[in-house]
Every structure is written in C-alpha cells, then in structure tokens.
Image (cartoon, rainbow, N blue to C red):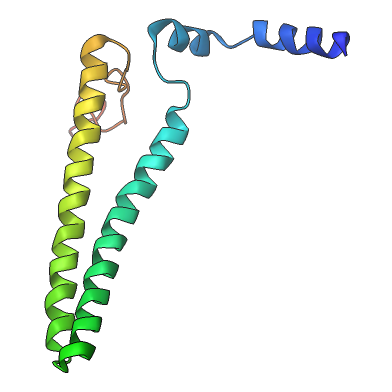
Length: 124
C-alpha cells in the first residue's frame, strides 16, 4: 500500500508545467467540465421554458376547452422565457470570464492565430 501511495505521489509531482502554472494563477482546473456544465445549463434553460409553457397551455386548453389557442400562446411565452433565461445565463458567464481575465486568472488565447490574418495572405 505504501508503494502505491509513493507511486501516486511521484506522478503528482510530475504534473505538466501548464497545469502547475494554472494552479499558481488560481485558474480553475476543471474548466472543461465547467464548460460542459454551462452548455448543458443553457440547453436546459431553453428546453425547460418551452416545455413548461407548452404544458401550461395544454392543460389550460383542456380545462377551458379552448384548444389550440392556449397551447400556442403559452408555447410562445415559454419560448420567449427560455430565450430570456439563456441570454441572462450567457451574460452572467461572460461577466464571470471577463472578471477572471481582468484578474489575470484566465487567458482567452489572444496570442493565438487562426491563419486568416491579413499578414499571412498574399494579395496577388
């Protein structure tokens, strides 16, 4: 058991320089997981708004016998609410990332090039 713990300790000591730099800067280690979680949250916000609006409209149509007007109305309201939630969440995520950039804890890769720069193209 002691040998296994020593082996794990040795592997942890050989962490990559980028990961050590990220830890020193205070950047989040699980940024990939956070990104996936945020994407799922955005999708869930949209789907939940549409589904809840549609269900409310469906049940109101059944209760008042006004089909399909209640469903259409509340489906559209639910869609609008879903998009509003997505925009609010996206703005919150953007503000959090910009704060981390200002603090120097997050690098958005401004020094990376995509090959579409005017300096790399030949204009003949």
